Length: 320
Image (cartoon, rainbow, N blue to C red; front, side, top):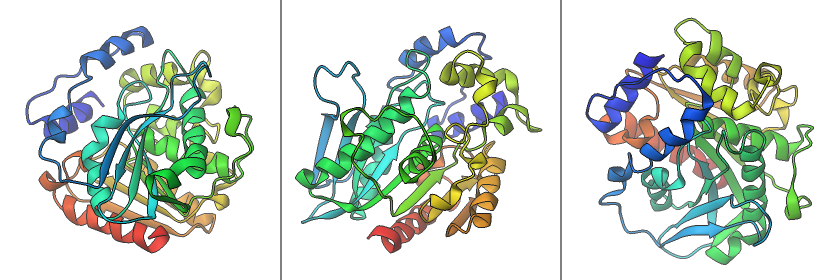
């Protein structure tokens, strides 16, 4: 697993990236801070869009939780625009909305108003805080997005890696998966997604820990940080590992994308099989010779730009 992580990060950054095994969740906040500006270079020379709104506060002042906040990328032209909620990756302990700005701008140029959410991160705020933030953000979008030119009736959710996990879990929670998540002041706001798009998603956490070719030594620390003490008891919770849900039929049409070299490939395949069995309209795309987080550099990986266009075309059919 260390070699796999090093491979895709090296590919994105264009230089060797050594990876060390973690020993404790206590190490994660410092790692997060050291990596805060790692992907800033990806945001250079972005196209002109209609508007960028940074640091949009979603929870009311005095709520006690700083998250969720968001960046909003508004397309050029006149709305109302279909809306895509997008969630960054980072194994639930790192990552920022700004790190997804390049992807968000590309989707905005295709006509989608993108809401890229900064959600609670572990270990300071473990499960279910991040998921509750995503659910709250979706309800906030339904209540408020018209002010920014978006159409709340044409709504999709996507995310990469851990963000793909949260996207699928939030769609389940909002569409009918039984749960006791804290909805805050927006608990009564209904949300219906017209599309779900997990990208190289963490959708089967037990598989991430034990499947051949994986390494518990590299993965158990972020999982333990996210799920907290006695984390193994939560691994098969459908809001932690969506592939195990008995209510997958409540999900909207779903597009799954993953690289053939990605450690998440077996999870993507398992989720596709489960969705088809649940009679959810499902599309699956696997890119040859491609690794994790390839949507950060689609112009540099085999078929990356073609995949972006397939995703855009599919979203247009669902909510465009």
